[in-house]
Image 1 (cartoon, rainbow, N blue to C red):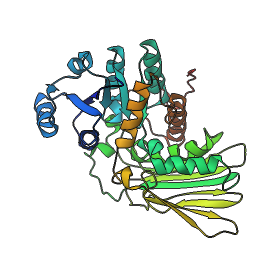
Image 2 (cartoon, one colour; image 1 turned 30 degrees about the horizontal axis):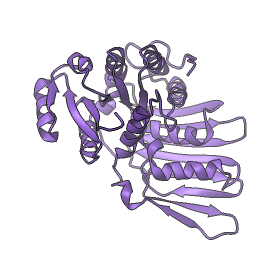
Image 3 (cartoon, rainbow, N blue to C red; image 1 turned 180 degrees about the vertical axis):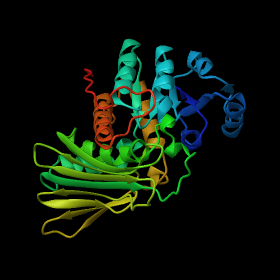
Length: 342
């Protein structure tokens, strides 16, 4: 694999699948060799659009294709457990969109399958692979702003979304939290780890999903994180990290930033900007590069997006849903603790 292109397959053909495919096409060491969908017409149209040679009208045929190095699972998160699990059980490596699954139980099952079949598995939390976010994390870890006291992050869309939209469909894991809130929660936990306490309030729709949710995460160190998500109001998608000796602000698009500003006591603000090779603000190529690097190195998970970190985020999301009273069809006891050694 080190001397040839990495052969990708894409499972699902929606908007995020198309965005990822567009970025893969621009990577000289990546090749899209197959696409799968529950609709053959959709798979063939996607294949024609992106020059893919093999189009499958079912997931099983794609998972059985041994001429694939890694599958990108781009279904709604309600189908992640089924789709990624099918691919792992068939011996495929997997990059699975976020939220990783509906709940931590499903996420733990995927981790166990990856271990059982000795396959690579990574959540597609592209924020963690972003060069500016990696730089911000490094600055915080080096103590540039002192001990972290607070983290604030928000992600809201104006809508309105009709009841039939996937974001309001409980069967598809609808609501603001899993689709949007996963970003602020993941940002806070990137810097502070899994919280010790979680409180939350939400406004629910008639269908029983959260229209907007606010949560306060707290750590025994004294650190706090305030996170907010919404599908009824467009927010700045801003984030801020305040420490004992300074602050870092991301004024907009915190999960794919173009810049952030470092404020340190007694110094002029310092602006960090994305480099010319980092691609457009919507670029997903950084996570694709990380997957390919890990595969070539023979790694079974990425140090940038470790599996235990994905499980920890799912535990927090489960706890928030437990606090606000959101349960999806067929679920059993969201928020119940699941411990998996990784």
